[in-house]
Length: 361
Image 1 (tube, helix red, strand yellow):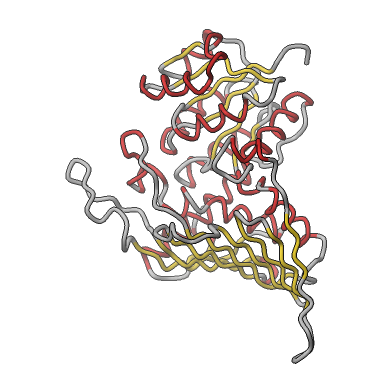
Image 2: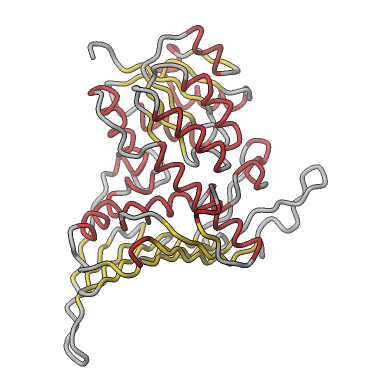
Protein backbone atom coordinates (compact mmCIF):
# COMPACT_ATOMS: atom_id res chain seq x y z
CA UNK A 1 0.00 0.00 0.00
CA UNK A 2 1.66 3.22 -1.20
CA UNK A 3 -0.01 5.65 1.20
CA UNK A 4 -0.14 5.71 4.97
CA UNK A 5 -3.10 3.77 6.34
CA UNK A 6 -5.94 6.22 6.90
CA UNK A 7 -7.66 5.47 10.19
CA UNK A 8 -10.99 6.61 11.60
CA UNK A 9 -11.88 6.18 15.28
CA UNK A 10 -15.45 5.87 16.48
CA UNK A 11 -15.32 6.80 20.16
CA UNK A 12 -12.80 9.16 21.70
CA UNK A 13 -13.11 8.34 25.39
CA UNK A 14 -10.50 6.73 27.62
CA UNK A 15 -9.94 3.65 25.45
CA UNK A 16 -10.13 5.69 22.27
CA UNK A 17 -7.28 7.85 23.53
CA UNK A 18 -5.28 4.73 24.38
CA UNK A 19 -5.67 3.61 20.78
CA UNK A 20 -4.57 7.05 19.59
CA UNK A 21 -1.42 6.94 21.72
CA UNK A 22 -0.55 3.56 20.23
CA UNK A 23 -1.40 4.49 16.63
CA UNK A 24 0.95 7.47 16.93
CA UNK A 25 3.81 4.99 17.38
CA UNK A 26 3.28 3.53 13.90
CA UNK A 27 4.49 5.75 11.05
CA UNK A 28 2.60 3.66 8.50
CA UNK A 29 -0.75 4.84 9.93
CA UNK A 30 -2.44 8.18 10.54
CA UNK A 31 -5.68 9.05 12.30
CA UNK A 32 -7.69 11.34 10.02
CA UNK A 33 -11.21 11.12 11.49
CA UNK A 34 -12.82 11.02 14.93
CA UNK A 35 -16.47 10.29 15.64
CA UNK A 36 -18.03 11.14 19.00
CA UNK A 37 -21.23 13.00 19.94
CA UNK A 38 -19.53 14.44 23.05
CA UNK A 39 -17.42 17.50 22.23
CA UNK A 40 -15.40 17.27 25.44
CA UNK A 41 -14.27 13.77 24.48
CA UNK A 42 -13.30 14.94 21.01
CA UNK A 43 -11.31 17.81 22.51
CA UNK A 44 -9.35 15.45 24.78
CA UNK A 45 -8.65 13.12 21.86
CA UNK A 46 -7.39 16.01 19.72
CA UNK A 47 -5.09 17.03 22.55
CA UNK A 48 -3.76 13.44 22.67
CA UNK A 49 -3.09 13.60 18.92
CA UNK A 50 -0.96 16.70 19.40
CA UNK A 51 0.52 17.97 16.15
CA UNK A 52 -1.30 15.24 14.21
CA UNK A 53 -4.66 16.80 15.15
CA UNK A 54 -4.33 19.32 12.32
CA UNK A 55 -5.08 16.57 9.78
CA UNK A 56 -8.12 15.26 11.65
CA UNK A 57 -11.78 16.00 11.03
CA UNK A 58 -14.41 15.35 13.69
CA UNK A 59 -17.97 14.09 13.30
CA UNK A 60 -21.03 13.44 15.41
CA UNK A 61 -21.91 10.15 13.71
CA UNK A 62 -20.44 7.41 11.53
CA UNK A 63 -22.51 8.21 8.46
CA UNK A 64 -21.09 11.76 8.31
CA UNK A 65 -17.56 10.43 8.51
CA UNK A 66 -18.11 7.85 5.76
CA UNK A 67 -19.63 10.47 3.47
CA UNK A 68 -16.70 12.86 3.94
CA UNK A 69 -13.53 10.79 4.36
CA UNK A 70 -11.68 8.13 2.36
CA UNK A 71 -10.46 5.58 4.89
CA UNK A 72 -8.64 2.28 5.01
CA UNK A 73 -9.72 1.15 8.48
CA UNK A 74 -12.01 2.10 11.34
CA UNK A 75 -11.59 1.33 15.03
CA UNK A 76 -14.83 1.06 17.01
CA UNK A 77 -14.12 2.19 20.56
CA UNK A 78 -17.54 3.57 21.49
CA UNK A 79 -19.63 2.42 24.50
CA UNK A 80 -20.73 -1.21 24.33
CA UNK A 81 -24.42 -0.51 23.79
CA UNK A 82 -23.67 1.61 20.70
CA UNK A 83 -21.82 -1.12 18.81
CA UNK A 84 -24.89 -2.43 16.99
CA UNK A 85 -25.80 0.99 15.56
CA UNK A 86 -22.17 1.90 14.83
CA UNK A 87 -21.37 -1.37 13.07
CA UNK A 88 -24.40 -1.34 10.77
CA UNK A 89 -23.09 1.31 8.33
CA UNK A 90 -19.48 0.14 8.73
CA UNK A 91 -20.25 -3.48 7.84
CA UNK A 92 -21.82 -2.26 4.58
CA UNK A 93 -18.42 -0.90 3.47
CA UNK A 94 -15.21 -2.62 2.41
CA UNK A 95 -13.22 -0.99 5.22
CA UNK A 96 -11.12 -2.98 7.65
CA UNK A 97 -12.73 -2.87 11.09
CA UNK A 98 -11.37 -3.43 14.58
CA UNK A 99 -14.25 -3.51 17.07
CA UNK A 100 -13.34 -3.36 20.74
CA UNK A 101 -14.72 -5.99 23.06
CA UNK A 102 -17.43 -6.93 23.70
CA UNK A 103 -18.58 -7.38 20.13
CA UNK A 104 -22.07 -6.29 21.22
CA UNK A 105 -23.95 -6.37 24.53
CA UNK A 106 -26.28 -9.25 23.68
CA UNK A 107 -25.90 -12.63 22.04
CA UNK A 108 -28.51 -11.73 19.42
CA UNK A 109 -26.68 -8.57 18.35
CA UNK A 110 -23.29 -10.29 18.49
CA UNK A 111 -24.54 -13.07 16.23
CA UNK A 112 -25.91 -10.45 13.83
CA UNK A 113 -22.49 -8.81 13.67
CA UNK A 114 -20.64 -12.12 13.31
CA UNK A 115 -22.91 -13.27 10.49
CA UNK A 116 -22.44 -10.03 8.54
CA UNK A 117 -18.69 -10.05 9.17
CA UNK A 118 -18.47 -13.59 7.81
CA UNK A 119 -20.18 -12.52 4.57
CA UNK A 120 -17.77 -9.68 3.76
CA UNK A 121 -14.30 -9.96 2.27
CA UNK A 122 -12.86 -7.05 4.24
CA UNK A 123 -11.03 -7.56 7.52
CA UNK A 124 -13.04 -7.70 10.75
CA UNK A 125 -11.08 -7.97 14.01
CA UNK A 126 -12.48 -8.17 17.55
CA UNK A 127 -10.32 -6.25 20.02
CA UNK A 128 -9.18 -8.63 22.77
CA UNK A 129 -6.14 -6.99 24.35
CA UNK A 130 -5.40 -9.66 26.94
CA UNK A 131 -4.26 -12.04 24.20
CA UNK A 132 -1.53 -9.56 23.34
CA UNK A 133 0.10 -9.04 26.74
CA UNK A 134 3.56 -10.48 25.99
CA UNK A 135 3.75 -12.64 29.16
CA UNK A 136 0.26 -14.01 28.49
CA UNK A 137 1.15 -14.69 24.86
CA UNK A 138 4.24 -16.62 25.96
CA UNK A 139 2.08 -18.55 28.45
CA UNK A 140 -0.49 -19.47 25.79
CA UNK A 141 2.20 -20.68 23.40
CA UNK A 142 3.86 -22.79 26.11
CA UNK A 143 0.63 -24.50 27.14
CA UNK A 144 -0.31 -25.22 23.55
CA UNK A 145 3.20 -26.57 22.94
CA UNK A 146 2.75 -29.14 25.75
CA UNK A 147 4.48 -27.46 28.71
CA UNK A 148 1.97 -28.95 31.15
CA UNK A 149 1.25 -32.16 29.27
CA UNK A 150 -2.44 -32.88 28.78
CA UNK A 151 -4.28 -29.80 30.00
CA UNK A 152 -6.85 -30.57 32.71
CA UNK A 153 -7.47 -27.34 34.63
CA UNK A 154 -7.17 -23.67 33.75
CA UNK A 155 -7.68 -20.82 36.20
CA UNK A 156 -7.66 -17.05 35.75
CA UNK A 157 -7.68 -14.53 38.56
CA UNK A 158 -8.25 -10.81 38.20
CA UNK A 159 -8.18 -8.82 41.43
CA UNK A 160 -8.37 -5.16 40.48
CA UNK A 161 -9.90 -1.72 40.92
CA UNK A 162 -13.60 -0.87 40.43
CA UNK A 163 -15.04 0.17 37.09
CA UNK A 164 -13.79 3.63 36.16
CA UNK A 165 -16.03 6.65 35.66
CA UNK A 166 -17.07 6.96 32.01
CA UNK A 167 -18.96 9.62 30.06
CA UNK A 168 -22.56 9.59 31.26
CA UNK A 169 -21.67 6.75 33.66
CA UNK A 170 -22.90 4.33 31.02
CA UNK A 171 -20.85 1.46 32.48
CA UNK A 172 -22.84 1.38 35.71
CA UNK A 173 -25.75 -0.53 34.17
CA UNK A 174 -25.94 -4.00 32.64
CA UNK A 175 -28.32 -2.77 29.94
CA UNK A 176 -25.44 -0.69 28.58
CA UNK A 177 -22.55 -3.08 29.18
CA UNK A 178 -24.07 -6.53 28.79
CA UNK A 179 -23.22 -7.08 32.46
CA UNK A 180 -19.82 -7.42 34.09
CA UNK A 181 -19.38 -10.98 32.85
CA UNK A 182 -19.80 -9.75 29.27
CA UNK A 183 -18.17 -6.30 29.54
CA UNK A 184 -15.14 -7.20 31.63
CA UNK A 185 -14.84 -10.94 31.47
CA UNK A 186 -15.24 -11.61 27.76
CA UNK A 187 -11.45 -11.06 27.69
CA UNK A 188 -10.95 -14.03 29.97
CA UNK A 189 -13.50 -16.28 28.31
CA UNK A 190 -11.73 -15.55 25.03
CA UNK A 191 -8.43 -16.59 26.63
CA UNK A 192 -9.99 -19.79 27.89
CA UNK A 193 -11.16 -20.71 24.38
CA UNK A 194 -7.78 -19.79 22.91
CA UNK A 195 -5.76 -21.86 25.39
CA UNK A 196 -8.06 -24.88 25.55
CA UNK A 197 -8.87 -24.92 21.85
CA UNK A 198 -12.41 -26.17 22.46
CA UNK A 199 -15.87 -24.66 22.94
CA UNK A 200 -17.63 -24.13 26.26
CA UNK A 201 -20.40 -26.54 27.21
CA UNK A 202 -21.77 -25.15 30.49
CA UNK A 203 -21.24 -22.32 32.95
CA UNK A 204 -21.88 -21.84 36.65
CA UNK A 205 -21.35 -18.37 38.09
CA UNK A 206 -21.81 -17.17 41.65
CA UNK A 207 -21.52 -13.38 41.83
CA UNK A 208 -23.02 -10.20 43.22
CA UNK A 209 -22.55 -6.46 43.72
CA UNK A 210 -21.36 -6.46 47.32
CA UNK A 211 -19.02 -3.47 47.76
CA UNK A 212 -18.80 -1.07 44.82
CA UNK A 213 -21.40 1.49 43.70
CA UNK A 214 -23.83 0.70 46.55
CA UNK A 215 -24.42 4.37 47.36
CA UNK A 216 -24.45 5.62 43.77
CA UNK A 217 -27.67 6.74 42.14
CA UNK A 218 -28.22 7.91 38.57
CA UNK A 219 -31.61 9.56 38.00
CA UNK A 220 -32.77 7.53 40.98
CA UNK A 221 -31.45 4.25 39.59
CA UNK A 222 -28.96 2.10 41.44
CA UNK A 223 -26.15 0.42 39.47
CA UNK A 224 -26.67 -3.29 38.85
CA UNK A 225 -23.24 -4.60 37.78
CA UNK A 226 -21.49 -7.48 39.53
CA UNK A 227 -18.30 -6.53 41.37
CA UNK A 228 -17.13 -10.04 42.30
CA UNK A 229 -17.73 -13.57 41.11
CA UNK A 230 -16.47 -17.11 40.77
CA UNK A 231 -17.24 -18.69 37.41
CA UNK A 232 -16.65 -22.32 36.39
CA UNK A 233 -16.73 -23.17 32.70
CA UNK A 234 -16.78 -26.76 31.47
CA UNK A 235 -15.38 -27.26 27.97
CA UNK A 236 -15.68 -29.96 25.36
CA UNK A 237 -13.29 -32.80 26.08
CA UNK A 238 -13.57 -32.43 29.86
CA UNK A 239 -11.21 -29.50 30.49
CA UNK A 240 -12.55 -27.20 33.18
CA UNK A 241 -11.71 -23.54 33.69
CA UNK A 242 -12.36 -21.06 36.48
CA UNK A 243 -12.45 -17.27 36.66
CA UNK A 244 -11.96 -15.54 40.02
CA UNK A 245 -12.95 -11.87 39.69
CA UNK A 246 -12.80 -9.21 42.41
CA UNK A 247 -13.19 -5.52 41.57
CA UNK A 248 -12.46 -4.13 45.03
CA UNK A 249 -8.94 -5.52 45.40
CA UNK A 250 -6.92 -2.64 44.00
CA UNK A 251 -4.24 -3.19 46.66
CA UNK A 252 -3.19 -6.48 45.04
CA UNK A 253 0.29 -6.28 43.49
CA UNK A 254 -0.42 -8.84 40.75
CA UNK A 255 -3.63 -7.84 39.02
CA UNK A 256 -3.87 -10.97 36.88
CA UNK A 257 -2.73 -14.55 37.30
CA UNK A 258 -3.28 -17.35 34.80
CA UNK A 259 -2.49 -20.95 35.71
CA UNK A 260 -2.70 -24.16 33.68
CA UNK A 261 -2.34 -27.58 35.25
CA UNK A 262 -1.89 -30.73 33.22
CA UNK A 263 -0.93 -34.32 33.87
CA UNK A 264 2.80 -33.43 33.80
CA UNK A 265 3.21 -29.91 35.17
CA UNK A 266 1.75 -26.58 36.21
CA UNK A 267 2.48 -23.29 34.45
CA UNK A 268 1.53 -19.91 35.89
CA UNK A 269 2.03 -16.32 34.80
CA UNK A 270 1.33 -13.13 36.74
CA UNK A 271 0.79 -9.58 35.55
CA UNK A 272 2.40 -7.07 35.92
CA UNK A 273 5.42 -9.06 37.15
CA UNK A 274 5.44 -10.93 33.84
CA UNK A 275 7.05 -14.03 35.34
CA UNK A 276 6.25 -17.53 34.10
CA UNK A 277 6.70 -20.27 36.71
CA UNK A 278 6.92 -23.83 35.39
CA UNK A 279 6.46 -26.53 38.03
CA UNK A 280 6.84 -30.14 36.87
CA UNK A 281 5.30 -32.87 38.99
CA UNK A 282 7.80 -34.41 41.39
CA UNK A 283 7.63 -37.41 43.72
CA UNK A 284 6.44 -36.66 47.23
CA UNK A 285 9.36 -35.39 49.27
CA UNK A 286 11.64 -34.80 46.29
CA UNK A 287 13.11 -31.33 45.63
CA UNK A 288 10.90 -29.01 43.60
CA UNK A 289 12.10 -28.24 40.09
CA UNK A 290 10.44 -24.87 39.49
CA UNK A 291 11.89 -22.67 36.74
CA UNK A 292 10.99 -18.99 36.45
CA UNK A 293 11.25 -16.91 33.30
CA UNK A 294 10.71 -13.14 33.16
CA UNK A 295 9.12 -11.78 29.98
CA UNK A 296 10.29 -8.26 29.28
CA UNK A 297 7.83 -5.83 27.68
CA UNK A 298 9.02 -2.89 25.62
CA UNK A 299 8.86 0.29 27.71
CA UNK A 300 7.35 2.30 24.87
CA UNK A 301 4.52 -0.20 24.55
CA UNK A 302 3.94 -0.15 28.31
CA UNK A 303 3.80 3.65 28.40
CA UNK A 304 1.27 3.91 25.57
CA UNK A 305 -1.53 2.07 27.34
CA UNK A 306 -2.93 0.49 30.46
CA UNK A 307 -3.02 -3.12 29.25
CA UNK A 308 0.61 -4.15 29.86
CA UNK A 309 1.67 -3.33 26.32
CA UNK A 310 -1.14 -5.32 24.75
CA UNK A 311 -2.77 -2.48 22.83
CA UNK A 312 0.54 -1.76 21.08
CA UNK A 313 1.05 -5.35 19.95
CA UNK A 314 -2.60 -5.77 18.92
CA UNK A 315 -2.38 -2.53 16.91
CA UNK A 316 0.79 -3.78 15.22
CA UNK A 317 -0.87 -7.06 14.24
CA UNK A 318 -4.03 -5.31 13.02
CA UNK A 319 -2.14 -2.78 10.89
CA UNK A 320 -0.03 -5.57 9.39
CA UNK A 321 -3.20 -7.43 8.43
CA UNK A 322 -4.75 -4.30 6.90
CA UNK A 323 -1.63 -3.63 4.83
CA UNK A 324 -1.09 -7.21 3.70
CA UNK A 325 -4.70 -8.33 3.33
CA UNK A 326 -4.08 -11.04 5.90
CA UNK A 327 -6.73 -12.64 8.12
CA UNK A 328 -7.91 -11.47 11.52
CA UNK A 329 -6.23 -13.12 14.49
CA UNK A 330 -9.38 -12.54 16.55
CA UNK A 331 -12.52 -12.94 14.48
CA UNK A 332 -16.08 -11.79 14.94
CA UNK A 333 -16.91 -15.41 15.72
CA UNK A 334 -14.39 -15.30 18.57
CA UNK A 335 -16.13 -12.17 19.80
CA UNK A 336 -19.51 -13.87 19.62
CA UNK A 337 -18.40 -16.95 21.56
CA UNK A 338 -16.88 -14.80 24.33
CA UNK A 339 -20.18 -12.91 24.64
CA UNK A 340 -22.11 -16.19 24.73
CA UNK A 341 -20.07 -17.45 27.69
CA UNK A 342 -20.41 -14.08 29.42
CA UNK A 343 -24.18 -14.05 28.87
CA UNK A 344 -24.41 -17.59 30.25
CA UNK A 345 -22.46 -16.47 33.33
CA UNK A 346 -24.78 -13.49 33.85
CA UNK A 347 -27.82 -15.76 33.59
CA UNK A 348 -26.25 -18.29 35.95
CA UNK A 349 -25.50 -15.62 38.58
CA UNK A 350 -29.10 -14.40 38.46
CA UNK A 351 -30.74 -17.83 38.52
CA UNK A 352 -28.22 -19.68 40.75
CA UNK A 353 -27.97 -22.64 38.40
CA UNK A 354 -25.75 -24.21 35.79
CA UNK A 355 -26.46 -22.79 32.33
CA UNK A 356 -25.70 -24.80 29.22
CA UNK A 357 -24.35 -22.89 26.24
CA UNK A 358 -27.00 -24.39 23.98
CA UNK A 359 -29.57 -22.41 25.99
CA UNK A 360 -27.92 -19.16 25.01
CA UNK A 361 -28.46 -19.24 21.27
